[in-house]
Amino acid sequence: MTRSKPATRPKNPRFSSGPCTKNPHFTLEGLGGACLGRSHRGAGAKAKLQTAITRTHQFLKLPKDYRLAIVPASDTGAMEMAMWSMLGARHATIAAWESFGLDWVVDVAEQLKIGAEIRTAPYGEIPDMTALDYDGDVVFTWNGTSSGVRLPQGTRLPANRKGLTICDATSAVFAIDLPWHDLDVATFSWQKVMGGEAAHGMLILSPRAVERLETYTPAWPVPKLFRMTKDGKLNEGLFAGDTINTPSMLAVEDYLQALDWAETIGGLDALMARADANAQQIWDFCATRDWISNLAQDAATRSNSSVCLVFTDAAIDDAAALAKRITKRLEDEGVAYDINAYRTAPAGLRIWCGGTVELDDIAALLPWLDWAYEIERGAL
Image (cartoon, rainbow, N blue to C red; front, side, top):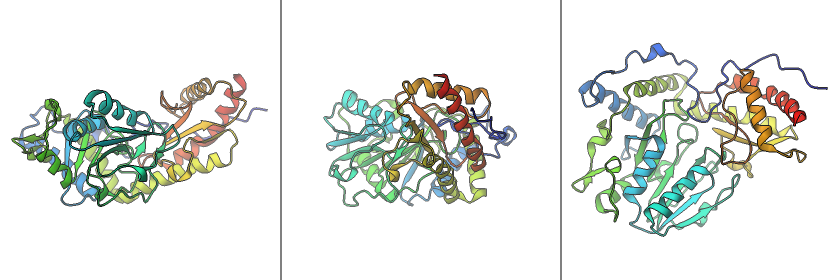
């Protein structure tokens, strides 16, 4: 007998892993203070950009001597800036275990061609980070958005490293307690945990990263969008709101509104706690079901932001078709949007659990997963 349709729907069905749902108190009216129709070089707009940088630095509790800049092209742009400007000074290792990390492999191996060592792991697993050569540069992703696999909580990288650690942290920042002193470069975008609009990235640099920029010139041409130095010195304006290209001041205002909300609920610690609680609900759900489980093989590596799930029913012949049918049915019901697995990941579901998602919405979603699975499993 098919179970009855659940009586309660999530109030907010937006569980996309990027752009992520807006914070619960978001309003269009809250964007009324945006500095629109003005030059981003003018005093008013530049002050907004500087405010976004300063508040982010404080909110994330970055070390005082770390630098932060708003850069073009989202997290991808920030990572490209770092790799094209800094790699090549030492031998490098690229650790990848999901689609975006593999993009950085392509950059380094096929574009920069510096002969880097490539360490990969299949979806659901993670390379042994302790076995990497930190006398050289190490490029890696902290939290795999498309795999739902992250470095375990409490992970530390060698303090006596000679190379730089370059970390794509876009699904980790604001959701995971990061050891900033272990990261020389970290990149992220507003569109992930904070639910901001796309196209803007943020780049965090340690003093060691700044030293690399000021003492090393790559063998290849560096595009204008990636340049962070002038006459051999760090371009200080970049870290004071003087962006390389024209930013969207509407997106900046949206991000500032998200920071306002996050501060009212308790700041960074509260955001991380919300993500933990959201993800735990799904993990507990999977633990009592025989048809679905976490893609992460080791519980210590399960992401608390991008939760990726796979079907464990051995009788399923076409997992991709099942996932597509479940996600379409839940979208048609107005229950969950955009929860199919990433296109290159194993077939299954992906549910965003970052801090802008409400715990009650996760709780309301879970019975619908059972309902949709039972209907669509029987239809295949």
